[in-house]
Image (cartoon, rainbow, N blue to C red; front, top):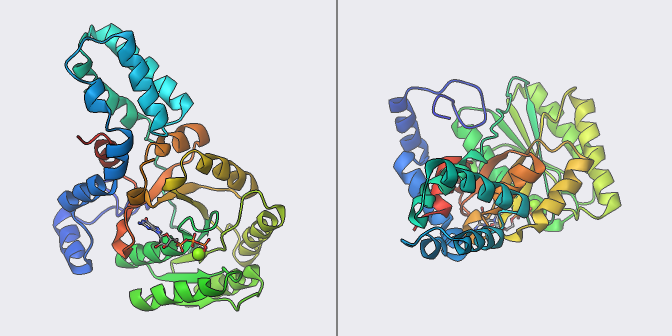
Length: 332
Ligand SMILES: Nc1nc2c(ncn2[C@@H]2O[C@H](COP(=O)(O)OP(=O)(O)OP(=O)(O)O)[C@@H](O)[C@H]2O)c(=O)[nH]1
Ligand SMILES: [Mg+2]
């Protein structure tokens, strides 16, 4: 991540001093600030779910009970059954090979095991002009807010961004994104209430092509993954984007509400089946005690987590940082 412009693009980063100056100019957080932001953002997960670790890792011998407690804690922390079993097996192998006997010696290995499971980081190819990103997800997951936050972030990185408000279903949705656009000084194309969302996306992409913009961020209406018609509508929006610009949308990001826990996996499978989801934005991590679901998303769905929502402000959507994440949830 260090040698890239951001977690997603393959552009090489500017030297550190330039990045610090830029972050001061744009109010982007620098490293130390970023770590404390992750720690604060994950406080609920670390306290509520992973908080029992201190008890488990007390200075006692490793016994069958240690494994049982650790397993129960990981499952309750929404890490997911498959991931939990795999983590426990790996830890037991480490204990055998390194001859560890005290449970306090397990903490470091657990951190390494969890960290190892968050490694998928494919870059977003911003070569296409414009690159079109579709934000999808169930109602209220954080799509509109994430669209605005992403717009702000990419604009600060020097990209020319267009927001497209394609949620023509809910009355206040367009207003909501327009208010963000105004506040963040980002251009926006919005559809009329009740109009065809595909047509709005088509107009948006054509406008971006005409103006030579870099990035089109499309906010779509929230939809239940179980509603056939609404999922078909989303497929149509995706097809229309491809007609407006061959290859578009280059990315489909599923916005998941981190407070929903394992049900988010069910949603993700349905969205993956309907449209070609390429990555996940984990919104509302700061409101959630279920940060552990990040492991299940990567392990059971094979989807990379690209950004995490650590608050409601524009700068609170942060490229997902596996190191900071694992340290944050295991924080004492
Ligand atoms: N604390 C916190 N709140 C968030 C975050 N992301 C979104 N929210 C809040 O969650 C609520 C819903 O966010 P929206 O962006 O409107 O969700 P949406 O997916 O667009 O909702 P629909 O369009 O109704 O489907 C808002 O009150 C946001 O401020 C986050 O990362 N942290
Ligand atoms: Mg919305």
